[in-house]
Length: 266
Image (cartoon, rainbow, N blue to C red; front, side, top):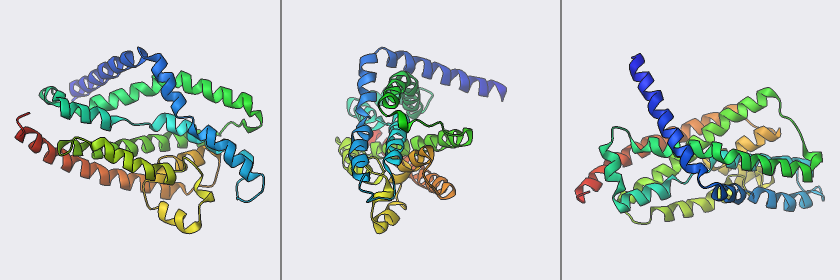
């Protein structure tokens, strides 16, 4: 038993260290990736200006902190597995992965996990620049809030990864599985809270959105970190429920897809 656990940890350490070494080779690209997630900062200025007219329930300071929290959330939850998996299927690289005694998903997870650490200095620099430009927005979350945010943001990443990895399974049947992610991203963009907090949406739209997985990918963790009111119990349960649903669908598509893949002579 102990030998098996030690073997798992050794394998995980090797995968993560190799992935991290690969990631830090492309520091300039990592900086661009971190910078590409700065859309919340651009939208923040728009909503802070709109809040001056007191048309929304949030003030300028609330918007500033929310969009900073959304930026931080995005840095931890960005996923690109569908493009990697699609490439592996179309190029035949998946065949080599299947010959190895480890599910290919662990390599993808190790790559994403390592990239978080490699990206961290660049993201921290952008956060520091934000506070230099908006010193009145500076705040320190309580220890409880910070720990809850870490838990929720990990759940958000797992849910985001499961959604995209499930869509990636369609690469067994189509050469453009990534096009489905681009279509899905349109709903993610508007309903996740990335371009605006859900508080500014009409109540009917907000009520429907809260039953989808989208708000729990950005809005829920960002609101928690920014100190805005959240229903913690409902949020966590919704994240777990959607994660289980996509996990089950993913494993079913994986088994069906492998039969399709082997049937093509791969």
